[in-house]
Image 1: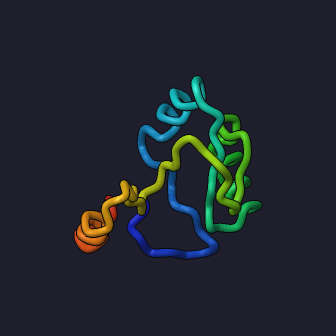
Image 2: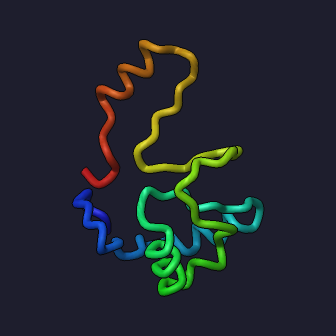
Amino acid sequence: MYDGKYDENKLPEVRLGAKEFLKKLNKNYDLVLFTSRNNLQTTKWLIENQMDKYFKDVTSIKIPAYIYLDDRTIRFDGNYEKTIAEIEKFKVHWK
């Protein structure tokens, strides 16, 4: 499981339940993996873990989308003060 320690040469192991989650999403949505990591390395990792079939593309370009799913996201709803408060109390899922 990812522990927050970034290593550009190593991608974390597949999280338990991830493949089933992607399979369900893929039934109704076109999935594009947006990553700040190397696209070729990420694509190779997806293939090695038999998850490439769920994704339409892998990109480092933020394309227009219906929804972005991210582990470090705060949704801006128009309220600046609420957004600042959410940023200040934000915790990543692995802590």
